[in-house]
Image (tube, rainbow, N blue to C red; front, side):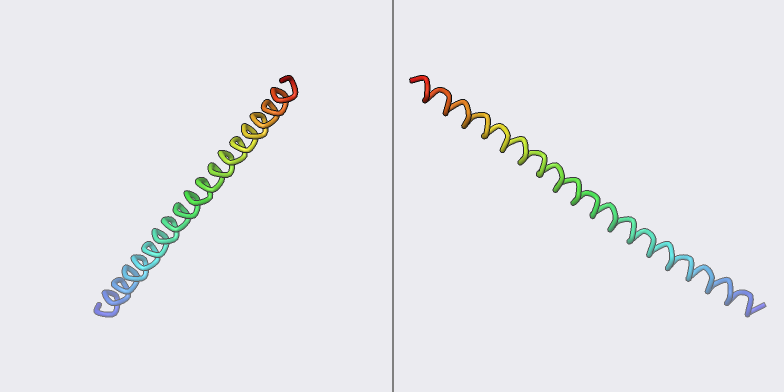
Length: 67
């Protein structure tokens, strides 16, 4: 009976370790996804800003040519 209790205890401990590892991996994946999302969002913002600046510069050139 003692061996059965030890095996059961060992199984429980191994399961706890495995679950802990899974939780840690999940948290790391979430952090990585958040970083990727923020980088992508910033890239989109920069792209829009450059396009707006290009339009503004093009408008300035046209206005200067008219004067």
